Image (cartoon, rainbow, N blue to C red; front, top):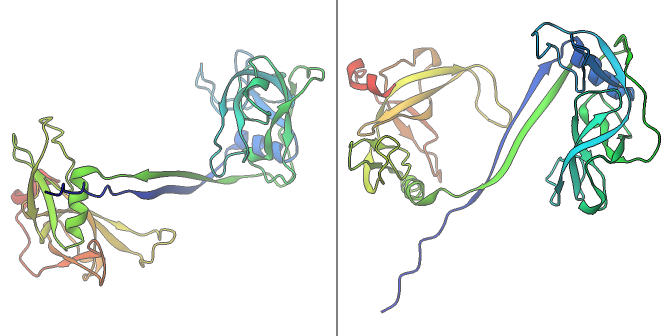
Length: 319
């Protein structure tokens, strides 16, 4: 007898990123413009504490603070952690230390990278200085990193008016997370069924709720869900939103509708795009069915079935 081969473990790289544009108030604008000009600015709070990076509201009184001061480009490491495997877009592409540095004249610490040959070369209390980037644009990356320093300490913080020519007034903040995703037993079965154009969930043996997509366990009862139940393919729109902003790298014309859809037999709604109908005709209770593209492993979108709308009482618990 030949032993059965173990099931394939599904894995796939996954990237979650969300770049967004934010405007800057007078304090943050002065701070980032100052970095572009090789000047580090902080702000003085009502009790005389100098905060770097600066904040716009006093953490004690919650009042607006606008008293800018210039601090030194040298400072002291207050704590650190060694990073032996730098990730893409981190400050340095060789191993380095993450450090909190209290700059001369400041009372709080700034987080950045320290270029050091190894962890034995880093210690709390060591003196460091800013290494400026070759090209500066008005961003925290204008500080390329910190480097060890054995020169004299800087002086006290001095007042600064924060006025610079061509001030930076906005930035694009890029949040990104790269990781490898493994769906596990329950979602592997769900994904494999989708490749056959079927939607399969799992039913809780205690409360009998059918989870789609399945989670492997019922979060309410705390028991494993092992009974697989095929649901749909048709379902009901329980709620929806109209998308008016085009997403990067998404080839869908706006406006379009993204909806929660309770497939027939499912105990909760999944989400999907609604097509085949003008966006302003989508409504709660609309009956829809999946549309598959050639070679697609999941529905491209859902379209109206032509059935009468579902009664509100039939799906109100799934909203």
